[in-house]
Length: 140
Image 1: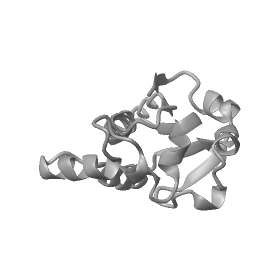
Image 2: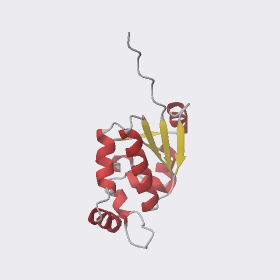
Image 3: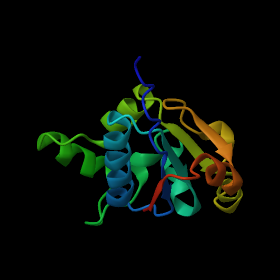
Image 4: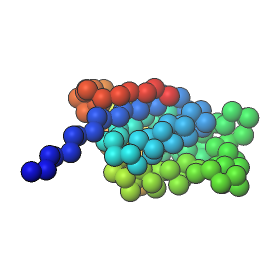
């Protein structure tokens, strides 16, 4: 008689910074956890809500004063997965992308402007608290 596999603990990443390097690190961490079989939820709030607009990541500020698009180019040249590769991987790995309903209002973001791959759902804190119960959490 075989035993059913033990369910993996959920992994929730709360992203509140719009700094491109922090958002990129959150995406790298999420992709790694998802590839390891962890159910992953990414919750974008505050200024980070801009990262999940169509083309939004590329407009985020990079630490050197440039743009995230420039940072992506450098990462690609160095063989590092850039944000676009990570977003595609997370979509394929069924990571759950949420954006804070309050942050959309705070930042004047129209939900119609959100990216579609991966799909982004509008939700509140209660949703991630429930989904992430009993799991691990990181804030970026």
